[in-house]
Image (cartoon, rainbow, N blue to C red):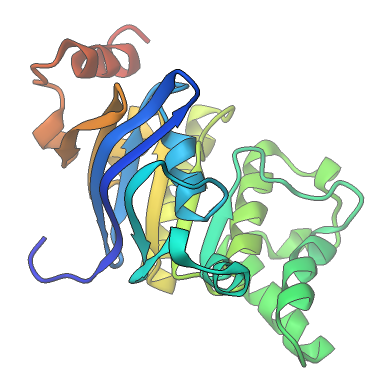
Length: 252
């Protein structure tokens, strides 16, 4: 990747839960303004990796550096400051059902940014709703939105604190094929417009192919393949990687 800045650097990372070994010597670099897809079946450690990245879990050994800081060395104040630079787009959008779209978006802004006027807040909300193509939803309740609209609002709310890193957790899960394409396009548009660096966690290879500059396949606690879609698929020699491709593009 040349001389591009490394935003996340993972070296020889291990994490176990009792007798269950989840991460077994993981190495990974995430570069500035890159979309990196992390592929793996359920239970392979994708979520554990992300939780270590934001300090919700601590590794047993190895190094996890985010924006130049070793996460496990940060105190509570430093960790909270780091988390404000990382936006997490949840699989289920995580909108508050009792709040309108406007109130959902106001919540993290008012909680974390001081001395904003009502005009400032409204401008920011309207700007981001426009960016995700849903300005008309500002006074709607989550129950009035489709699954795809909820995903878009979730992304907009995540962007409201201007994160440097975006984490997308199964962004296309439960969506129809046309809406999946819309969400994949949105992930790319967010990177272009807001210059974000992103990790996309998915088992959807169509999503991976559309959004990923590179992808990393997590198997048996390690990244077995890291590269572009064309470098990894469909001529994978590892049967487990090949079966991943077959499941997404042949058997389905």
